[in-house]
Image 1 (cartoon, rainbow, N blue to C red):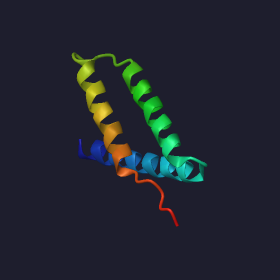
Image 2: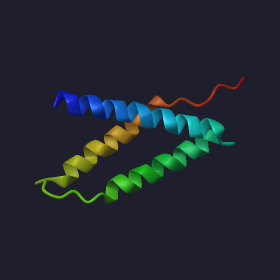
Image 3: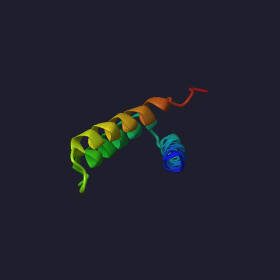
Image 4: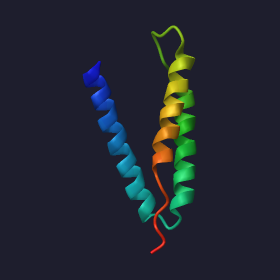
Length: 79
C-alpha cells in the first residue's frame, strides 16, 4: 500500500507541475485553471468504477483530491 501511495503522490506532483506549466503559458492562466478544474471534476464524476461496493465514496475521495491539487496552485506573480 505504501508503494501505491508513493506512486499516486508522484503522479499528483507531476500532474500539478504540468498543469501549472501550461497555465503559465496561457494568456489568461486563472481562467485556464478554472476551466481545466471543471473539466477534470466532470470526468471524475463520470468514471465507471466496477467491482466496488460503494463507488460514490471513491468518486467523493477523487473530487477531494482534485480540489486539493488545484488549491495548491497559486496564480502567477505580477512581475
